[in-house]
Image (cartoon, rainbow, N blue to C red; front, side, top):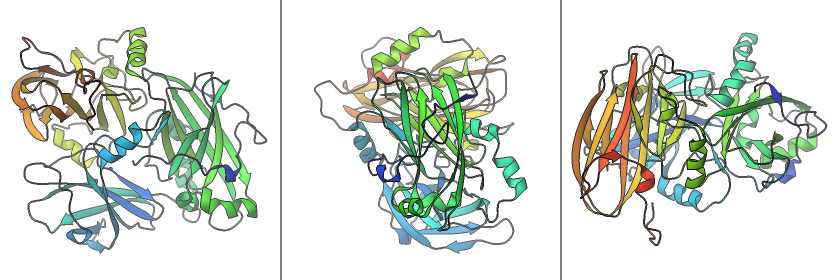
Length: 497
């Protein structure tokens, strides 16, 4: 299954460059973003550190009207005090508008990184000047407005340059394992290249072609700085089917000397490469990774082919869900009307959901229902496309559901180990802590329309795990699994998510 090559496309053998003038129509990549709020991430855009910040009031409700002069940002060196940093700009990101734009777009979706928490709440992007020193850097964000809690990742990562990348650095960063892990699981070091991808061909051909673009703001991160450089890149592509299983891994390289005409086009169009995956139908999901051999910098992007509910159900029925299989928590393939869960790898000894708060998510998974019954994990494997681990992980689930029948709704949550249930940002059930399977019920009144659901969960010590969320709507006699497919607007409705 592993070790295949991309199909030959031109003079470079297994991968080639397309005309840089053909990139004007390429799709843009989507944004990578109380005491805890896992999933808020930091990422690098060129030489700026962009910090995604969620602000909440004392009732745990998002605050959306903070201004730049109400924030303070500090760099926190390993030794010494805090260093104030100037805010270059502030943006307010409304995921509702982004979701509406994506829902109106047919065909392929392009994403990068773990997205669930940032897609669930209005948040801020605060940019500061990034350090010139490679590696991790710690930041602190405060607000002068009283009674406001901020949630953000406390580190950002700066990649190497041609000037400061040592042989020892490259021996660690530029390896076949690093490329495969980035494409088929998650990067071993944070991605620093801003890349996007576009499917060039309609279904029905002998292969699917992808134009992968290293965006102009990342050209200096692959050593393109105005000289006439030699570009040396490794590409990896992991192919997933509709159930989230890995079906193939493809890899290849490009080694190309740019001429002056090439360089003149780069500021407007970026650096473009053409990749090809065999097969008459486009993959359900292709994860594309590009690794610069000269600096060790990495970029990753997912290109998915959204499937209707009927197709998802049909694919799932073809494979028997294994008892004790961690894949029951969800798959990397985006789904309609689904829980979106950011996945975390925890340190051994974690005892609380709050241990997620200082970590970066490694990927996102999707599932229509949380229905993992209590089971032994002795022979369990990891989640394909996410993690090799079946122990010491956390998943922070977010979802939306539509109520057509107002009234009292009862929920039952079961978990081993810790979990919580929030409906409309209000805590209903708290089962935090490391413990055998436990359960709790709660009742709340819901009106007609859209509502939010949030379920953070962590799995700690062996040898069992469980996560089940049940619901009992008004007038129902018993609980049943809470499936978001069953809570959607009427066909004739015009409600907006």
